[in-house]
Image 1: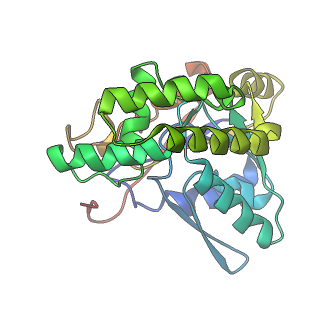
Image 2: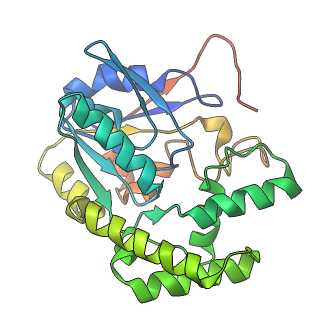
Length: 261
């Protein structure tokens, strides 16, 4: 059986605790939306982990999938993996080659745009990363291995948002992103094919939602929402699995509703 766990409110409902409890009964845990703006707190063997990108089940030795619907800040991911390793756990993760990358330019865009809109962004570059994805100038994980492509896309972002940055800074950013791509190369796969093959072979998947349904870009309290589909519908496009792959949805809610911002 494959199950999705989603937040029914504005996030912070305690999804991490539920996912951590359920993960022992599944082979795979998979994230399908959002980025480092999400945070799941898990206590494992007495140590507290605050996971922003890595699926919670990884702490129990499960394979964690970061789907194509996510936007990934590689610096944050590197820090999380290091923290997990320091706890004596070797993280088993797979990252979609189609997942988009959050760059320093996205964080700069976030700050510039929020001065105008004032909608309470987390300033982590999540919205702009989805924005560049839709504008078709976003950087995917698979793009990190082509320096000329990285430079072209970064320069397009600078032009679109009129970001005050010189060419040398762009070149330095290209080198760093390329190096990060090489570092994460072993984790990058066509997760859409991999997860569907796993499901076909009888493996069970726990789909891990981020934030909450009321922050969904289509069905939430627009415009005070996030930039992705946080409800269970988002997992089909965010992981590339068919609707028949989902057997149950567990909604997590808390006794009284709160939201950040």
